[in-house]
Image 1 (cartoon, rainbow, N blue to C red):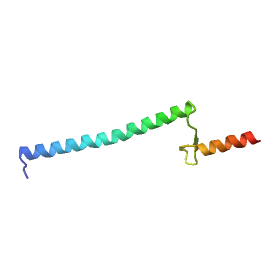
Image 2: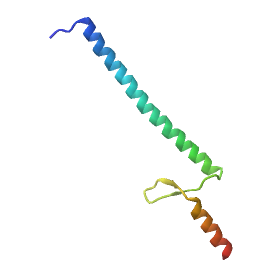
Image 3: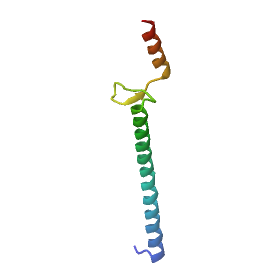
Image 4: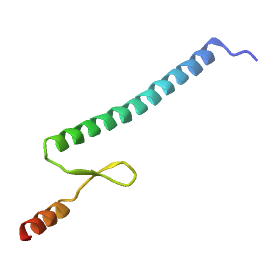
Length: 77
């Protein structure tokens, strides 16, 4: 089976374009994940948010209602 030059060029360019957008898709998600993680760590370090490690080992945000209840219970004692 022989393919002419134009068909070969079209197939090659289609593969290159597909790989380009596939790489951009994965890079975007990786960069976004890194930015969110860094931002949350900085906010926690500076005391703007409180996080705790759950049973899976992942960090999760502590709701403000739990913090308020802990403060109220601490003041009443």
